Length: 486
Ligand code: PFF
Image 1 (tube, protein in one colour):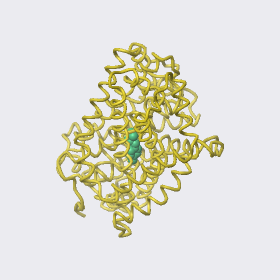
Image 2 (cartoon, rainbow, N blue to C red):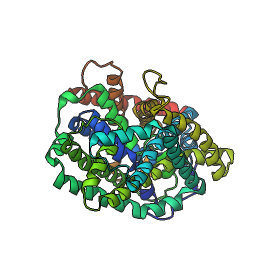
Image 3 (cartoon, helix red, strand yellow):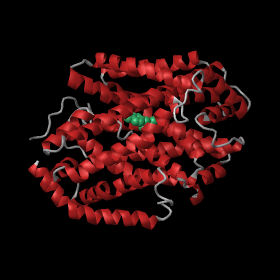
Image 4 (cartoon, protein in one colour):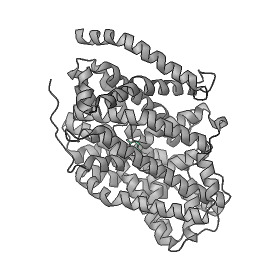
């Protein structure tokens, strides 16, 4: 079977890069990265996260984009087509289905956090953040969350804006918005880092972020670092695969992936460098949780010249960054409803939006009236985040790596990726052995089935990768014969 014809393509050469960076750079970088780094104790976590980006995130992202472009469609259909092209088992489509579900589940709590960013843009303007201390700002954050009408109102606003944009079609809007947004955000973060450098406890912040302390490497922290690598690059949640399906043939997937991953990592590290010095200078606890940036940054804004204007602009930028990520989470579902069930984009967005509004409002209640509604000790908000980041996305990643590394005919990915012989061999080695082994080890460790820290005993990791490499090479010819017979 020949490759699929594209139905939709990005307008310009930079279309995919802009949109994928728009998807990747968001609350994950500016809100989640600092707060989980604070919770898991700093440097060791950051190093694990960077290792996961390099060894798992980048190879999986290359794979996911290639699957999208080869199959040209929503995750479920694209994977289905690629598998059909190989006479493979159609059950692989479930990976696409799980990715779409993960993206949608993320969106259900993401709109609540994006609502915080929107609300704080307004609060900067109306003076309610002119509080003298971190404690006072903490109280502002708590009272905002205690009011379900305010919190719900902002979440609904974000959800409606997202649906409106997705309903209209992403390409034009996202491409245009991104030309000015990304440079703007980068400049503002640099200014904030400059402020932290001259006014915050910069040395302490840097030491916290980059000092490696092996005693902080718990299984829980490893799982969080792995999950965050997936979350921050928008992997295995439908977004990147669907955006990848709009890339014209001939554009280099690997180069594009590196640009997106580097931009994303830089934004996260800049956010960390901007925030932690302010936190230490004000005697704040870095493990304060999800409110971390909302309790610390407004204090910095108060103390800088033109701070109010800067703060408004900053939170506005974060809001836009959140919006471009939110859009990408639901794009896969809308594309699927359009392709499979013939629903127009506005109708698809409306249908998905109805479900989104119900679940996101329930997630919003986790901060007030529903704070005690818990399952396995987690509120709905925490549960959605935990299930998607820690389990669904890495599981999707491992399955996509196995699909591309072991089950597809050799020529398909080679053709799609268009890499040099060395580059292709490296990618293949990563998706066959390194990424799946590392994800498996982190899973096993998190489940308590490994009685030691696999990454401290690094020789276990190398041993496992080596064993799998040998086994894989021995078993693969058999697996491929079986596929040809099927
Ligand atoms: N990468 C986004 C962020 O860091 O904020 C979050 C995200 C977007 C996750 C899109 C999943 C997704 F499909």
